[in-house]
Structures are given as C-alpha cells and as structure tokens.
Length: 185
Ligand SMILES: [Zn+2]
Image 1 (tube, helix red, strand yellow):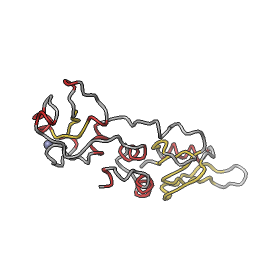
Image 2 (cartoon, helix red, strand yellow):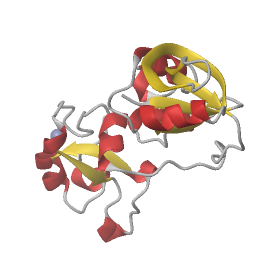
Image 3 (tube, helix red, strand yellow):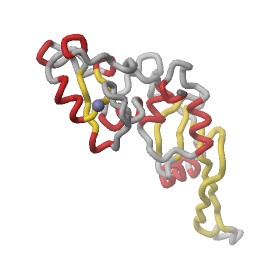
Image 4 (tube, helix red, strand yellow):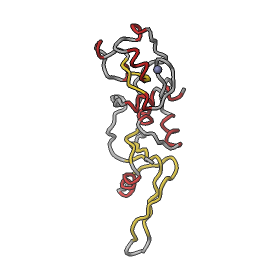
C-alpha cells in the first residue's frame, strides 16, 4: 500500500511508503489530506502529559516544499510494465489479451530501420506477432496496428507505475487523465 504524495499545488510527486508518509506528518510537512485514512501509527508517550502521540496517514497527502517535477517538461520513463499497462495487455497486431510474461515491447519502426526506443514508436505485442513482424514496418509486414501509441501524461504515468492503487487515489488521478487516454476506454 502506497501513499500518493502531491506538491502543495496538487501535482503528483511520488508514491511513498506509509513509513515515509509518517515522517512527513511528524515533520509537520503535510499541508492537506485527501482520500481515506489508511493507517494509524502510535508513537511514544509524552514524558510530561503521559499522552501517546498518534499519527493517522491518509491515502493522498499534499506536502509543503518546492515540487521536483515539472509536468510540462516531464517525459515518463519507458518500461515494459508501464507499456503493457498503457496498452491494456492487448497485442497491437492480433488484438489478443495476454499475461505480461507472454508480451513483448514491439518497435513499430524496427531498430534495423533506425527506429528508436520511445513511447511513440513502441506498442505491446505477443511473442508470435513480434516474431512474425520481425524487422519490418507494419506496412512491409502487412500487419496494420489495431491501436496507436501515445506518450502518457504525468497523471497517467502515476497510474502506470503502481499496480496497487487505492480507489480514492485512482479517482484523483483519473480526473486529470486526458480524454484520449486508453485507460479510460
Ligand atoms: Zn499478437
């Protein structure tokens, strides 16, 4: 279970552990909270009052400080896991739905023809389709793409990089996802 850490302005910063979130609370860096309370931590007893300190952690927190991500300059890193999630585990050539271990990162314009490793030149493909297409373009292989690639937005990237997103976190992130996103289809 991860906490979605936002800047004070509400931009996604990172997925952090409950323990990291507690440190933000303890340092009085949490400016606002959203979502549900997901954990309660009991600290030490105050030597004078005898009261025990308690910190409750919410699923989404806004912290003070300068954001370290500029959403307009950010290009999310490309990984197979995020690529397959972007493409919903569907092969771009046969349309089949596969488990991750049967999928590959397919370069639309192959390396052999100077294709590059970027979000706009990759799609998800099953192993047989990737093998059949080989180092040809879709046109050369007569294997038209069933969907088109795109670069995920900052908010989408936060969805793609966490496999266990809580409902309220997902609602927050999805509210900012472009209408063209495949995650909405
Ligand atoms: Zn296929």
